Length: 271
Image (tube, rainbow, N blue to C red):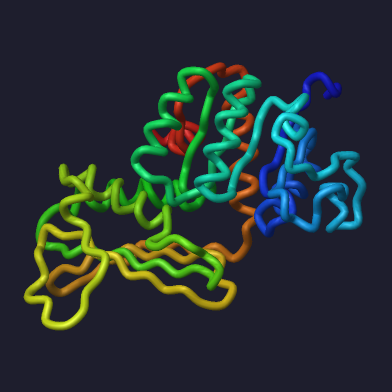
């Protein structure tokens, strides 16, 4: 494969935990090239080589200047914060750079803006890039349809102490998949907190429970509790590497696409 055939990738949040994992995944791949690295203006990593954390030299310097960082890139992979991702997306639209979004916690208004931007560039957005998680989503869709009555549905998720949004974007997506399969609107049937005398459980509700602690990468369990039996569908992440590899699959999927809004079901052919 020649240099002209490589997918030219910029990484947002390049000095963070996920950013470093993405930099290493791109560096180790045979078909992607690191061409840009972005971070916030207050990052102590500004001016350093993006691969220096691993003892390597990529020739790509971490910058907070969006135009400089994106120059020469075909794709941006972004696992930052909603406000950062939105600013990055607007610059991607100006420069014609396709975007892979793993950020969670967007408002409905921000999601609308992302959808509008997808008419100008190709965007792959998913709350979880893990192949395993997305296969789990498909299993949940099948299970929900088969157990549409007589089963109470609860979603339990656990993440590290640094995660700032709850429930996780993955847990919410699981709820959406289940609600859609049941013909319900998650906004109307979700229960996010229980305390005190709550009364009997509404059988049409989908409950969420959130755990935060330590360095848990990400655990998700969906419980279908019926009379005399319960089914648990669980996915556990032990490394962020699975998110990085899924992101590179998304980059390859976007190759040759100039517009459109996609998710990991599109990438994995799970429609």
